[in-house]
Image (cartoon, rainbow, N blue to C red; front, side, top):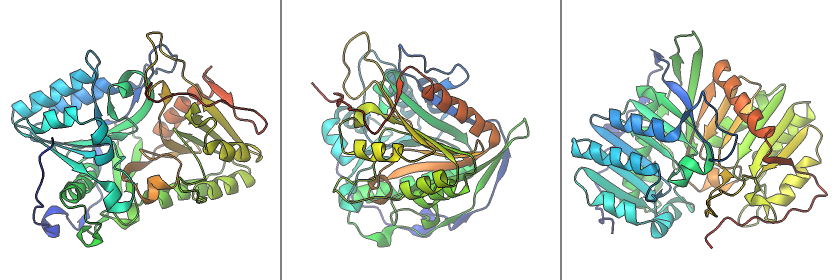
Length: 407
């Protein structure tokens, strides 16, 4: 079992700087990172694969590695083993390694977390975000030496490397890394004492950040996270930043999620994303969305059918064929989470298009303003949209649920 933790003193001014100045760094070290399901045509040769980037980043660590993950799920013989070996090697050379994992998922996947926690220079804490805010710890990010960060849709799961479509970002920028480091430190403390007491949440303010690449493309970065109230900088709450992207749109909006629904898990109505989406369509903006076929026959189907009736809105289900080697639970699916506007700006993160991800669960994302990167993301979206795995959602079609759980 992961060792119990006693709470450390909460010294806000030491752990959390009051502000970070805007920085501009000449670097090409911001890149998309993908996973493409094997036996599909979704791989992009110009986008590096997750396992290669993760191992490279971990291998570069000199002093500190901090991971905040939904869960840890290895499989013998799969490429996640290469990542695990690099983490263990880092700890052996003196790098301090910390993991935060979600309490609910830890009950399903305890083995690797317990193994890590038993090793020298490695510590694991389990955070019960249900007690904190009513949801789960759903973020997927890690920080290397407080200098670079990886974030996106990729879980620390062997399936996320070879059997699920994923998209993330590697960013080398100490200012950006510091924002997520402060988030990690908050959750490290919340894992020690999940009291639901908001007084322990620091109140910081961060500037935006710039990366100027060698080809003179200026990349504007705005780190964001959720849920409201449980974040170091309240101005960085995901939802308002995402809604502002919709309101900026003049020609097109492209979205991709594992799931999208205006109906909450408790039956409540959530119009946070839908309202701006419908308003954009009403002023002539073309809206296209890809969602996983895991939602067929579920509560989200009615939402998608209703939206598909609205002029200028098109939605497609994406269905990844089963692997030739046999059925794999919770795999063979599109899992990316991003919103792209006008080929010039996008949000990318770990939230799906549902209320709970913004109001009760821990998630991390980022707003990127860069024509070069936005245009590349548009090609990524179009490749999926035009692929043989996508089918248009129509109001009159009947959809059969797809099995994806344990057999």
